[in-house]
Picture (cartoon, rainbow, N blue to C red):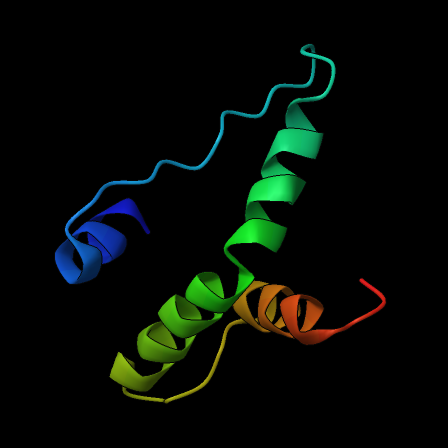
Length: 72
């Protein structure tokens, strides 16, 4: 993700670290996903389109549709 974003926009953005023992770190990750949801969706679209099968894996599909779902 960082490499893709840097190649297209010229700046590097790193996903926040998450830790089972650090309170709030998953909130940081969730906030980042909401903030950059359109960019993440674009990355997933390009990833899917470059595959021979042109389909998402189950994990990619779940993330993609979760980012599109308004209640989420």
